[in-house]
Image (cartoon, rainbow, N blue to C red; front, top):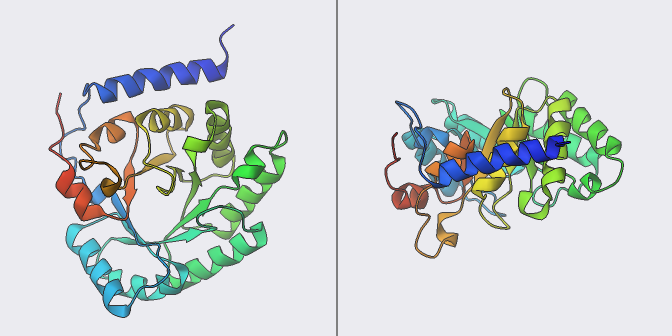
Length: 252
């Protein structure tokens, strides 16, 4: 008898193969800049750098700008003329902070003006035989972040297919709005990983891929197959390089 894992894996492989072969149509009006989340998660940001980041995000109409917690309030004020969402990364990048610390970071980020909260999953708890503790923690974070967009970041390159599916189902139970395919620190999101997330997620849950153009030897040739595989957004610290290195989307 075919298992759920085998069924989802099969659907994901077909989706990934079609995306890699260019057999997709992103639809009329597809706009890449509005599907980009610019991440600037570095230890220091000067006032001038933050102003430049916000001006770029507004000028290009990015979906969101993710900055460290101390700069969320200023980013919110600078982004207020437009629709770019101020976003905060919680327990970044390892996901090893105690849940009480994650909750406090989340509260402070929201109080400072964050409209999107991205929490790095406690991967070590996902690998336990019993994931009920992780489920409770994810649900607590949903309670704290009620009213804003909540996502969980999965380092999919370090997880088995079964673990990826389990993480997506936990995120669904926690009423998360998004799941993210990696932080980008351990490599770009793979088409197959995105396809598996899309196949496992409910229709209401969105998928974010992580892409760093400069980590590809000759530039990232095309990110459109990631969207075809199921991504709704890409997260990157180098959006201009990504836009420069990406050719026009294939149609039909």
